Amino acid sequence: MANRKEKTFRFIIIGGGIAGVTCVEQLSSQIPSADVALITASPHIKTVTNYRQVSKTLEEFDVEEQASSVLEEKFPNLTVIHSAVKSLHTRSHSLETTDGRVFGYEKLCICGGGRPKLLTQENPYVLGIRDTDSAQELQKRLSKAKRIVVVGNGGIALELVYEVEGCEVIWAVKDKAIGNTFFDAGAAQFLIPSLEAAKPEKDTPCKRPRYTTEEPAPGGSHTFTADRNARRQGSSSTEAGSALGPDWHEGIVLQGSEQGTRRVSLEYQCEVEKIFTSEELLNSPPQTLGHENVGSWPVYIKLTNGKTFGCDFVVSATGVVPNTEPFLHGNNFALADDGGLQVDDHMMTSEPDVYAAGDVCTACWEHSPMWQQMRLWTQARQMGWYAGRCMAAQVLSEPIELDFCFELFSHITKFFNYKVVLLGKFNGQGLGSDHELLVRCTKGLEYVKVVLSGGRMVGAVLIGETDLEETFENLILNEMDLTPYGEELLNPNIDIEDYFD
Ligand code: FAD
Image (cartoon, rainbow, N blue to C red; front, side, top):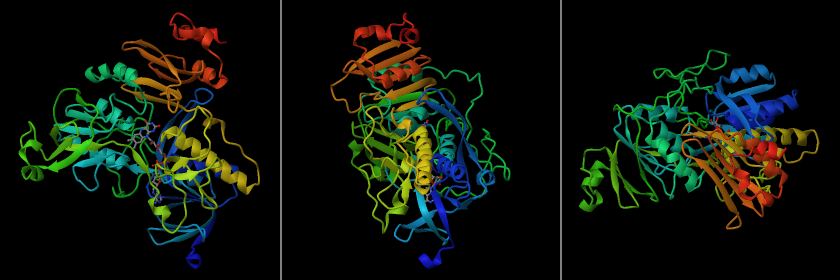
């Protein structure tokens, strides 16, 4: 293998998603003379634009899909190789791509992302959403659908059930409340009426990119369009594309075959027991079906609450698993319980000279008490950026400390058209019964929840335009004893910003 090396690069980064591209940008700006290669299976790369630091730890940005040539023009020492890594040989510091080429590296960073945790493999009636191609497949199938079943309770399921119109949606969640990954039952209760109401008209254009199928102009930045008829050329749906991110549904019309707005029915505390085709159902005992007519739907799904639903297709939105498979064989990577490549506080895996960042890795350093890993866009950027800095620091023999962004978990997103800010241990994660909650809620307007432990604020959920994020972030970081303020902390008549100035 060593003799077949086409070229040895100082740095190779695998993956053209946010983690990989940010890592490349960081490395290339810190050591412009270094030979860097980006190997990616997807035809486009994802770049962060309009980055905005909202507060000490909160950040917002847009994401653009771009031609890789844009990155190569910016960094002359960068080579982008469009192929997938088939195997990795950490002992010889080399890897092989699916087009049969072998490259050597001095330092490697794996940013291969995740893949959908599908309910079942290779069932044509079960769809996962991960990348542009799978989102378009969803759109195509939805346009002919009368009823779909969505299984899962994370961010993707939340956004999907809110966006789909003209098609009945049965939403099966394993928890007692919706959005369990992000919210408690109170916040879920606050959001539920939005599912029943019509979607507000969009009066401002979406400031985030639309994911399109159009090939970018050579060397140019990608234009994002909502053109349903556009087609991406030269890309195959079997390629491992980058994960979508915020507003992934903005550029695609999630319209079923019927008229009318949203129709969502919720099935709580249940999982999938079995998925049948209509033929399989015909051969099964009559009680399997319940009230559905055999043969009227292409697929049936039996839930553990005993109900069976026929539908046009099932969307499996049950999370992602780290995409480690191509890198493991013959190597000795330590894997975390969730299947991610274990990384230490310098983003190093257990294999020498191999780093990892983004969805593919699991942060195994001793976390700050207010931080936890969640496979989110922001953390992919932060990890990619920090991995790049760590790789450069090692080569330059410079010391480097864990970045401040890992001090406090913070995330801004939008659910059901509400701004949502999550801070610290927003759901009391890991605190057991050692915490209390303060909640303020104005129906249809805002939901504010504060998690206190030992009199100190350790987390918060802010839904709506609360304008409290910066103050609460400071209160969490300062570890101030808030006992004297009691419930006044959430008194809407007190300007809390002035209060703590
Ligand atoms: P990815 O973006 O998945 O990139 C992985 C890259 O590795 C790809 O370019 C792929 O082609 C490449 N690759 C994979 N295998 C190989 C190989 N063998 N050889 C070479 N290249 C390879 N996060 C949020 O914060 N907010 C949201 O609202 C949000 N919504 C989401 C909606 C959807 C539908 C999905 C699927 C995810 C969403 N996420 C969201 C999560 C977010 O998109 C991911 O956490 C983030 O994109 C991970 O970035 P990454 O760079 O680690 O991986």
